[in-house]
Length: 331
Image 1 (tube, rainbow, N blue to C red):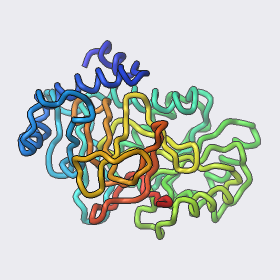
Image 2 (tube, rainbow, N blue to C red):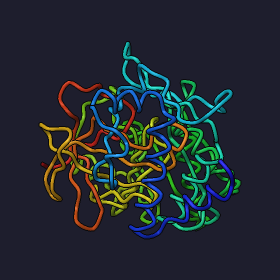
Image 3 (cartoon, rainbow, N blue to C red):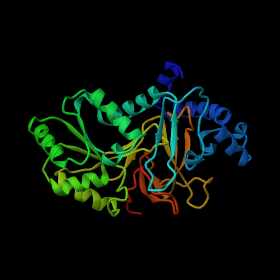
């Protein structure tokens, strides 16, 4: 992809611009993504019969486990990211042919929600991600730290004492700090090293990973707020199969960047939309997935609000627990 096209993608700010770019990506992928084209053939749907983005079919996310989902790319992928999954489960793989697109997506997506990266010292408590290869989250956080450029940035595995010391130092220095962590590790740390750090931004991602019992989101966030002395817990919603992320600044309400949209499908008819406010399956349009598939039917349940925000309320029955956000909200 040329730089001009990348700039066009990340310059989307209006619904009209999103619709134009979305349809252009759909036309390209319906022709050049073999897995997506075959799926459309099985649906007996020709691309010429799709007139707007609400008619676009979504590829079930499980295809990333069983097939190489590639669109219009040649040569070797620059990176292959893999999901964490559970023990014995088949991981998803996302072949990324232009890491520049991924870096632009997560950098622009973060700064649009939180401001310049140079304002933050970034600490990461991501043991389960650091213990394996191919984590797109680790890649993202590493590059966010590079763009931050703060000397206090760092990853932490299981050394809670070192993280505690670093937080004390940064708090005493009056620095703006983002602590991003896998949910179970943040909870473990908050229980062992409770503190009062009201200006700290705590961002959870990734669920319990089988390390602890799942908790209702409200209860989890109450415990984390109490442990860190903050008023809100932030969340990141992303997954291996996507190159963009949505963020919540509290209360489980996620907002996506302008080149990413969430659509809700009926729980019992995957080809029918669900109205705003009704819980259904989450479909995602991520236009940063230019070289794979931008139209993903996830296994998460949620609901969309009329302002574009969305909530995650659970998982579809019989779907694999895996490394995206697994918070269970009130339904």
